[in-house]
Amino acid sequence: MFSATGNILTGSQDRPDIYTVAINKPSPSSSSSSSSSSSSTSSSPSDLSIRICKLNMVGYVPGVSTITGSGRTLLGIVHSIVHLASAIFDSKNRAKHLEEAKLGGLNIARGLAEVIPVIGNITVFVADMVRMFKFKKQADEIMKLKPYEYNNRITLFIYGKEIAKRPLDEVEKEWKKLKETKRPSHSDLSDIIRNNA
Image (cartoon, rainbow, N blue to C red):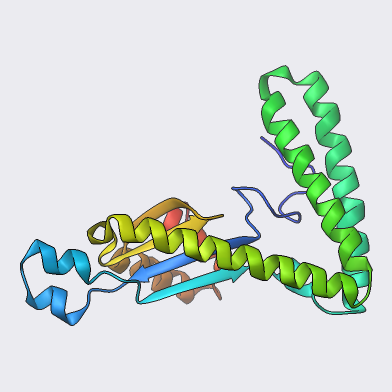
């Protein structure tokens, strides 16, 4: 299914604006001990980081965000109109089009908030920080349920839900290979973890 504005507007599972990457390296105690109980208790993430899209970060800067917020609002309007019209004529993909139209509406609201200098910037910043904290906590809780499943793995969480998990050495190899051809971005890491590289 297409997106009326390409990859510019974020906020869906395919184009998240905030996601969490958890890297679980084996701890020295779990590698030296062969008992399953010790490995299950020693699997806290070595690195649990939150990634946020650049378009959201620009929304925190007064002045600049007035321009980007206006653009985001206009793109959101176009995005919503195109997908609402598509939902009428494309009954096969109606649910997806309505989901994309909702995404356009969310971007309209965020764009309008970003247009307002200072107050709007503080509002979107606080909203993103609250969301980031919530998603990080959800990812941490998921990993605590079955910690042994995350040993020596890199895991992608989008909006607090586990999307993909791969062995750490595989991801590192693909990341190094990618670095030889270009400067990788956060979305490249997401694609590698999802195995879409």
